[in-house]
Amino acid sequence: MTPSSGEFPANQKEATLPRTFWILLPALSLLTMFFLAAFTEAAARWIFPSTTTTGEDCMVLNDPSTGARAIPNSVCHEKIPEGEPTEYRFNRCGHRAGMECGPKAPGTYRIVMVGTSVAIGMRVPREKTFAALLPVELSKLTGRKVELYNEAMPYRFTDVLARHFDEILAAEPDMILLALTAKDLEKIPMKTIPAAGGIGEENEHFGLPAETWHFVKAVFHARALLTSMAELFSRSRTYTLLLHVLYDSQSQYVKSSLTAGDNDMGYLNVQESALWQKRIKEFDGDIAEIEDEARDVHVPIVTVLLPNHAQAAMIAMGEWPTGYDPYKLDEELKSIIASHGGTFIDMMPDIRNVPDPQQGFFPVEGHPNARGHAMMSLLLARELTSGVVPALRMDSQAQAASK
Image (tube, rainbow, N blue to C red):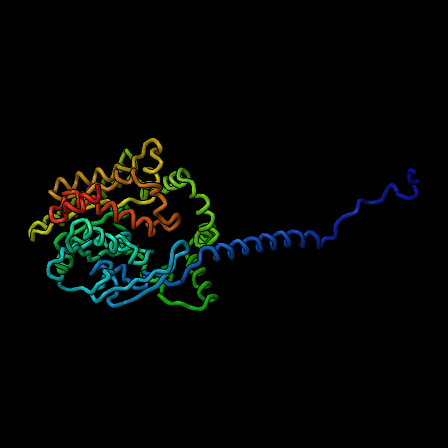
């Protein structure tokens, strides 16, 4: 039946929501988004747990008189979200060497390694670093007792090594291994290197609420709102989870890495910028001084460029964007070392024969993981026993077994 006109007056107003609904609905939406974000962050923290302490807590990274150094006889522990529990134990000389500093045992061939964070094995237990694995492999291949004394330290660049070369010689090396990465050529100014302990002004650890508040204040201090929000998100475990999903694609990782700009990734550019020309020139001067000092005391130096994640991913794909070349810096450093009469081992081409070499790096943090260190140990052992270092030639039995 059709309702009569008396049941629905012509002037009846359309029903409207109460005014409180216009407040409650947006609030409910925000609350839902908050709980979803909180749940995602909680799940990500369960998948990627970490500790508040770091290996850098045992280090003094911005002392201009000594260069970056560790605190002697100190021990620190950490676990980054992507990694496993890691101990940093430094001997009385401040080295993560796995042995005490002092004279070498008779009949031992000692390699003293210098470099920065990759060489010291940041974020990886010492026994899984190539510093620990390499001497075992070399001893097996050469038939002689080989040990590696690790003097590497984050931010201890080639200019510092040249100034403190006597400290390297004090370890009685039969050979010096200079393990470089592309990052080492940036030479971050010491005044910009954070003090040990990270973002805070003091290296203290509070309860979780106080520590969170201390961290938020530090992030927002003298920063724009959007920059601060981006910084906070980048420190979240949700960010780590999202990047792990995104970087599962090699091509996407390479594409994302190349957006970092000339300061960080310029060494991959075929057309070298003025900034990287300056860095290469400074390295040339540093290595000339280091090679001269080593030559005076008849100690050979072997230099190697260790791959980073972007280089490994490009080489694994077998292709890269036009205008870039993952082998470019390797070739440049080889030429510089040769011009000063030094020895350079070219490890980069060998990566082509390694299955999935990009899996040897923490996708977000960037350093090599345990798999990456194992890969570099095998490649270094192969190159060092190839004849470039006469004292480390592979013996006949090991050579036959290898074949």
